Length: 374
Image (tube, rainbow, N blue to C red; front, side):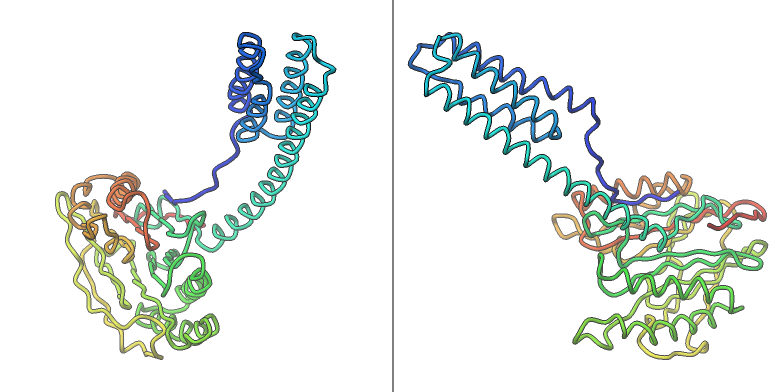
């Protein structure tokens, strides 16, 4: 299960536009009837321009043009009703309504063209983001998986937070990380680390060697992505996890990343770690990294997260209490857990995060289970 913020709001359904069409039509009828009831020295016909202006808000050029024609016809009817259709004043009013309606239609055409271009750009961007941050399957090896990703950047599905997972011989390897920066500018750095993990995860037998390979790759390549004047300041935190299919002992390495939460039946315990420096701060060898181990039993849920979750503040400046809230949902499935977490986190911050946030919920299933990767 993959929950992501964003997605592009589509155009209003056709039936919605036709339902709203009753509003400008009603305005035209009301103005036309009222103009015939008020004293002759009061002219309400010019107000008919309100109708096409309102229609342009929810409809396309054709419906807007139709309403424009109705306004011109209504003004002509008012002039005919009073017997002054061919007077200079009425003809000018009709011409003015026609010109203004045409301008509104032109505006609609330009807007629709720009909307189409933007929709195509968004489609390409979404496809690119989908390729970079593959959705994880619901079952991966011996664990059920659910992912929550909230990007701080408007209209983005990913940012500087990242995750990846792949089956290896005898188990599953998972990475969650956070590159320096946030939003769209950090995507290139996230792509670098994800690509390095996907390749190195199958080439190194131990987590220490895997961490050292990621360190070398990040150190070698991050400098090329650094903005001018920020050379040497690029780094990434990462948490590397190896869950064996048969063994209940799970191995983990933290490269400057927050420790995960282990959720039991009614508790949330922080897994104790011996963190190494973040990736990209120096060419560190395998001996630098401490492989921590803990027991991950069937029915337990492991919660991996980035600092965008625990550093999220409400209007009073209070950090989000992840461990306290997660303990309330410890008995839920990974999918329900991340759904509850998403709603609660967004409610805590008032609907908008200042930093990217990612969460992976892993629930160990009884016995070995060969999942798939996509």
